Length: 119
Image 1 (tube, rainbow, N blue to C red):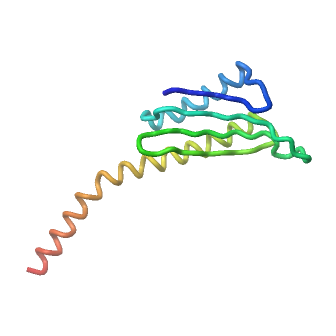
Image 2 (image 1 turned 45 degrees about the vertical axis):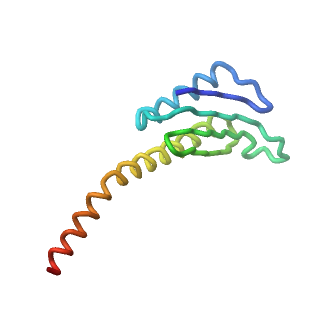
Image 3 (image 1 turned 180 degrees about the horizontal axis):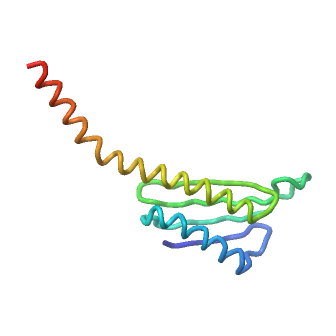
């Protein structure tokens, strides 16, 4: 998996880079077919102090790009929320892939049973 971490209006320190990498390991445990990911960390210049820190990710998997964003008062909290949302989306995508591979057999059995019942 290729990982790109960029910062807008902030410097990405080695501590932040390592924190993001450790959080992304949780995603790769669930789904190992990730092609690449691009993480964008930024600070917005809002007048209020709430939710100035933003984290976004574009995760490219086979056939789809997952885009997720989160905002919080702390950058680490924004990264945590981002990874929680990403984890749910990846599990949902993985279940969708697994369900698609089995729906053809179920349809064939259901159609065959209904044809046999009418004959």
